[in-house]
Length: 367
View 1 (cartoon, helix red, strand yellow):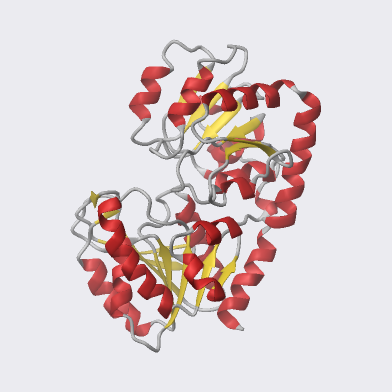
View 2 (cartoon, one colour; view 1 turned 180 degrees about the horizontal axis):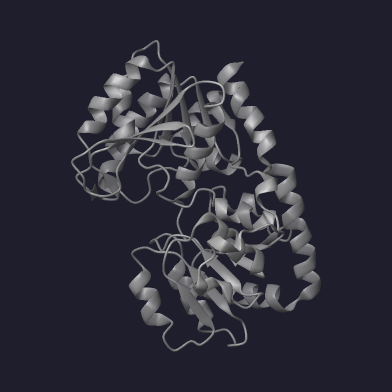
């Protein structure tokens, strides 16, 4: 049995959750997979679920503290399942999961996927990083998603000899023109084509304040569609009231709606400002449709996913003027747009098609 450890799992949405789901569903074809995670909402009950034939233990939760879910049952269930597991696969950073590394049997096979360093929780960071180093020493292999992350990480550079790079990926056949309109809500169906799209969480590190300030400098003829939910929802609502060229969809969308939004857009803007943004899987989803990406020069995998003047444009984080100029240039320069659109599709096929990365993961587990 393979045990995957992460703080949340589908239907809770996020880049890491997508990775855990993809790993679990792939590996489950060859060996039984169990995912251990924590309920997003307060609950005193631990639920055992089955999603696409993967068994999920969603532990009881006291809510979150400093963006970290709190659960006592998580440790108990980890102790039980960990004894049965042939391989335990941790997804970092997840402090409760990291702490469970202290309970591991020395002979247990351990893999880690390193998505990001701890950035925000500075008070916990020093203690958790000590345990992360201990966990990394125990690990047979560590996966990270880009060379940039391997070089940037405060932890990983110590373990280069056991770290391999497997980028996040998508199945190209899932990103076609065949979108089921029955799953598209009314607020999306009548959107005009060729808008500039932001799609993701409204979180502190996503650079939405920079994007809003940039929009306020741009002509009304460029339409922006901002889609998602999070702690910055109120800020966005307040600051777009006087703009008739901004459509806010303040909710999470389903998979078909996400594909529909990407397909109808002109390009994606991804203005993240902090290294908490380690990769940005939405970038490759856009590139699968041949949509260029405007991203930022973070020291993580973000600017490696979509490369400046190859598949999009890259600007300095928090630089409002650079972002504004990039949006206007990509929107109005048809020659550049067509070149980067082709570059986005070609780069997706070269690096991020799922068949290649699935093979690398299976070789890791079953060689």
